[in-house]
Image (cartoon, rainbow, N blue to C red; front, side, top):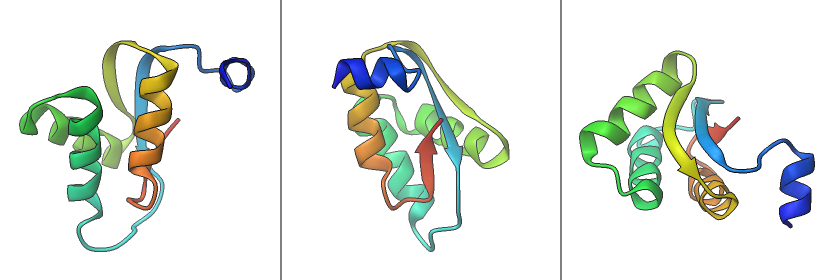
Length: 84
């Protein structure tokens, strides 16, 4: 699985979130919850990432592992947000 992630261009590091669709009511709230659950960010920090993702790309600084990437990708499924 790690080999596949490397082929897809993600080997750990900064996470980038983008809004990909208007998934309906509560999608932003669910995306914020997903960001908080994986990163342990506070409400303000997670909301700032989602707000930035609405406009362009929300960046989650840090040295995040492939496991964090995969976990957040799963958590964001169905929210209208995704990792890029």
